[in-house]
Amino acid sequence: MLRTDVRIPPEPTMTQVTRAARLQYVCSGCGVTALRWQGRCDGCGAWNTLGEGVAVSSAARRPHAALAAVAQPLNRVGDGSGQRTPTGIAELDRVLGGGVVAGSLILLGGDPGIGKSTLALQLAARVGTAGRPALYCAGEESAVQVAMRAERLGCRLPSVAVLAETDLDAVAQAIEMARPPLAVVDSVQTLSAPDAAGAPGSPAHVREGVARLLTVAKQTGVPIVLVGHVTKEGAIAGPRTLEHMVDVVLYLEGERHGEHRLLRGVKNRFGSTGELGLFTMEGGGLRQLDAPGRAFLDENSLSVPGNVLTVTCEGTRPLVVEIQALVAPTSFGLPRRTSSGFDLGRLHLILAVLERRAGIPLGQADVFLNVVGGVRLADPAVDLGVAMALAGAARDRVVPRDTVVLGEVGLGGEVRRASRLDARLGEAAALGQVAAVVPDGGRAPAGAGLRVHRVSSVSAALAVLQSG
Image (cartoon, rainbow, N blue to C red; front, side, top):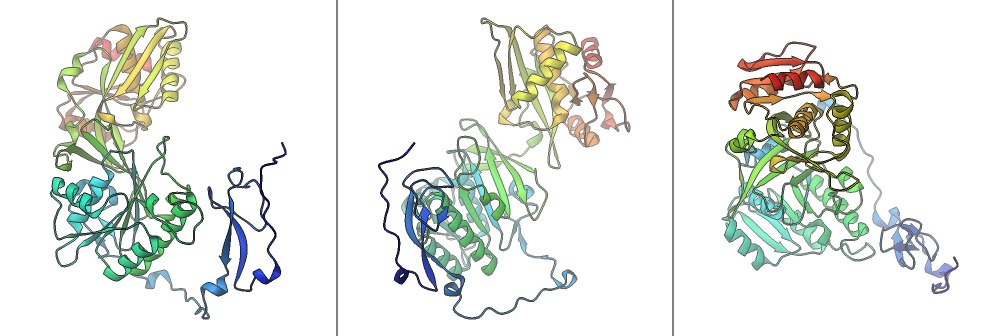
């Protein structure tokens, strides 16, 4: 369809184009550039978003001739030992791989109100000292508001210096001049880059801000924590390249009105990924759990049909979690399937296996599944626990409260092996469990003193639990 409401600006003359800089057009929405003006952006498809800008050539950026780069053999490069600083928060150090690495860029994301700013302020107070305070750059709050929040958290200390600023150049200059032990930018979406088109928070500003702070971190050796907003899908807001540019990506998860918070590492160039840190939200801020193994257990709820204990592995940490299932006759022609903390597609697969391979009719029943404590399970070894919870809810049978169930479920109804089985059983035994249902085949698990039942199919697991 031909647009008639677009304004075509005149083409630039040759006198407007120099050797050091040339006129270009930049989209205010996605940051895509074009050599000629056009009504519709090729990047995001929006109309009338291209504005005039000047692209500076590499010769203008570097007036002096660059020195030739010299490559070094890896065996002559330092191993980085001594550049990792413990934060004093054990659960955070676990996710980071032992502490904060000098010159690293850390991106911390999470839902609104989940506790990102709280964790960042507590981290700054722990890392900074009175003689060398950490720098907290607040883009969403004034210095007085940060002080009020710090008073509530017990972090109003001389170990933290606050800078209420959104200008990217001012923030970068403050970090370069102070050289603090840690810098926090809360949040990266509030930074205003002078050379970027569009409004602060647009992809162009966010990309420019992260690129500038990445250069500052590498040149000064100051670790920088970037607090980032998330979209409604749960991803970091801004260009997807942000997660590729930074060194560490952390997500703070949990129910906003619940007490538990889970800090998950999804990327770490200096340690293992997939590690999990457990916190509880209190009036004085985030506090690490003293007994993480019992954080998601409720002894009173384990005697209800449909409630089953399983063990998931988050990185190197085995974690005992409770799965709750409820099956009820549907009141409509199309039954409902609702899942919290477990993939809905995986739930449909297990339901089909139970109906086809184990003879449990679930086609005309509403099914509700919940993982207690706000944990999100992606470990395939919890499939059998989910299947036993659904079967127990459908048949109104109680699974023994002192039994854990482990194993991956295949489409044929077979139960496949689970990784790190010995560590999972050891964690279950430490919490007082006495029996375990595990996959058959492979090396026999040590069991850690548990009574181990080895099964090869979903039907066999049902028979063991019914006989127990």
